[in-house]
Amino acid sequence: MDRKRAALIAFSLLATLGISGAKVEEENPEFWRSKAKQTLQSILDRKLNTNVAKNVVLFLGDGMGMTTFTAARILKGQLQNQSGEETVMTMDTFPHVGLAKTYSVDFQIPDSAATATAYLCGVKTNLNTVGVSAAARNGICKSQKRNEVTSIMKWAKDAGKSVGVVTTTRVQHATPAATYAHSASRSWYSDADMPDAAIEENCTDIASQLIQNIDIDVIIGGGRKYMTPRFTKDPEYPSDLSAWGTRKDGRNLIQEWQSMKTGKVARYVWNKTDFDAVDPEATDYLMALFEPGDLRYEKERDPSKDPSIAETTEKAIRILQKNPNGFFLLVEGGRIDQAHHAGRAYMALHEAIAFDDAIAKGLELTKEEETLTVVTADHSHPLTFNGFPFRGQSILGKSPLWGTDFLPYTILMYGNGPGHKIINGKRPDIRNITTSNPDYVQLSAVPVDSTTHSGEDVAVLARGPMAHLFSGVQEQNYIAHAMGYAACVGADLRHCQGETNKPATPDNGSGTRHTSAVLSSSLLSFILALTLLM
Image (tube, rainbow, N blue to C red; front, side, top):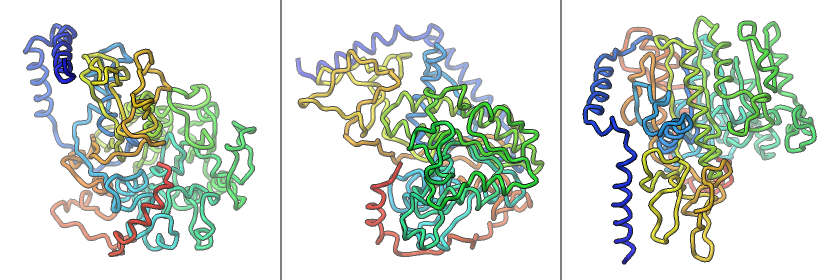
């Protein structure tokens, strides 16, 4: 029997066996008709919320493409002893959905710095650059001068709102950095990470910009070592040299931040005990840095030492919402991306579930009539969902349909990544391997040390005031403008002025200098990007 015929027979057998897994009610057509009627009526009853958004909360799942979204939904249900496919995550309840095109100015597939500049600053830019227009060049300090672009965080602060950032990565990482920093390189975390030429040309590291560019009310994440002088021992890991301070200029940015808040209640904490002791009602400013670098994965987190992203989100909102003018908050589930880079789908999906829990907490603490909540991703990863698994089969398991080499494969795989293993011309036999193990590295088609990003559109979900603006297929930089319009912050104030039919005034602010040299420098950008920490 040839392989093609064997595969067809196997597939037919699987289809027959799969029928037995259906729930009894699902075999009744009325079950599906009834559900569809309920959904239809709920949409027909929906009223547009055209209020001005007092608050804006942007939840950013770094690397949370649609495959991750779907797989996380299934896993969340399976962790609750359900089959998983029919599970409704908090993200699934958002009534307005669109798609965003993620490419950067110079690459089809972007990084987190270029995308963050797009959805936070409203301007697309080049790979590896943050808070600057595409006229700036990757790694070239002098090119960022006069090409800085401001973010919705700056717009909100200028409008009198409180602002904050919560992340599971270091607070100097690409996504949070785009709220406050302008840098020709996303990797210039501290001055120790900068080339001498950049320092001589008066470019400033991202950690320094964190405390000087915008008066940020709440800063929560990791990144202690970029804030303190070289050889400063870490309070949690004093014997770990890699956790010690890195700054060459001798500055202690944490102490500087505290001294800048004279007359205010400003708390700095680095552990959960002190974090839990922070009273939101009696706190004006909070800086919480729980790790020298990025935070631990959710499944490796010690609840007695580090809070969850839901807990940090709650603390941030409770502090920020005291402002009668409202607030802007960015919450990033940043380690979804990092788990994908390592080819660890288990970790990525659990990070996405924790992220969904944080969204639920955000909705619980805010009022929909006055708070615009947006959920999106910056980019995707080459994660595939394949193999005709049975209904309810573990999303982290193996396909019942084997390859033509008569070897099994996992339901989730990567197009490229560290999981590429060919031994003597054959794939590894994983029949006796527990693929749902937290440390398991998924199979991949092409060998690379770190899984790359992928370039498909990402979902944009919204609820609250003017959430209907987030529909259709749009450029990613549209997100910042739609949020700004809804909240009446930034250049376009027509919504609160009752002039929605009047054309928007062109923004002639910073970052608008055009150049015809973008493509001519693409080779240089590509070479520099090879060293990128994605």
